[in-house]
Length: 402
Ligand code: ADP
Image 1 (cartoon, rainbow, N blue to C red):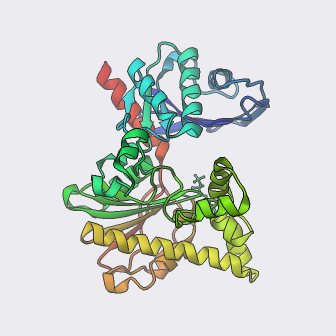
Image 2 (cartoon, protein in one colour; image 1 turned 135 degrees about the vertical axis):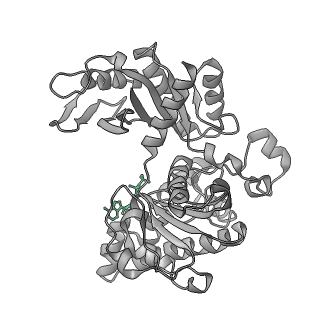
């Protein structure tokens, strides 16, 4: 019962092979520089790492290289491709067409095609990854697991923007939310950990990585989330601006004489920690710069902890109370200062971190509670595992078919 999880980008493709009998990752790797030249980096656990330049003119050739190395005597872990019962694909944007994990058929491919209109940068590569698998493994079921799906439970007043209604109808402009697979995984773990019926739980999940999003989850269902029509909205991120006054956009386009697409690049790649600090989009570099006395790096850090706090306050109001806050992803799991600072001053709302527990957290696969014993709200650090969710959904859908 092996499942191959695929995360296809425009010039790269990450993969993991799961043995679903015990939910263990057997091998993982990366095809890089697809359509440029091609490098495959692969590792089967317990074996030597493999890295080689292989021509990858397209995603089909990249998948071919992956399947070959998985079956390789020296570096691989399977004897035959028939051992792979299904492939699960990570899809960033499902629009209003793909609202849950699905088994691929012609209609599903058509729905994914429609997503090109609202998420062209991600959808094209996803389709190429999917086609690559279908061409190399024509008899193997393919499943799509969609990042926006978990957020589809939001009520209209949370996902609607106050723009002319016709523009929503015409272009499907609305809040979708992202990192749904991660929010789903860590909120389910928190519910387990809280030990009360799921329907009674009120949780805020903070997925803090290069891209960051915060969600309000009531009774196991998302009722609001910080990212929007695209993954640009919400809190400050590595190089994305997060929330800004929309009037800044036409103002800058005029003043700097730049096009809409240049503006898009600017908002996505030149803002956030990088733009404010001038140092880096990586919070580790920001931390180092702060230690060296860099004031702009300090400002970027302070915007981050302030933004997190602001969303926690907002979502407490939206949820009408709070049982738990969860921190996850690169920053949430690894940066104790961000966890600590973003929760300072919230003690009167029953949110109290235990500094000692927070400092001594080590990244392990299980949830760790870092709240003080007398904190009304539990605070957890829960390492995310989006690939495992994809593999689980995939096997579930394939089982249902049989
Ligand atoms: P992505 O959104 O690309 O998946 P990640 O979840 O890996 O990104 O998060 C990247 C961020 O997490 C960076 O700002 C980085 O500083 C931080 N981060 C990742 N690993 C660590 C670590 N071991 N220690 C401190 N910070 C880390």
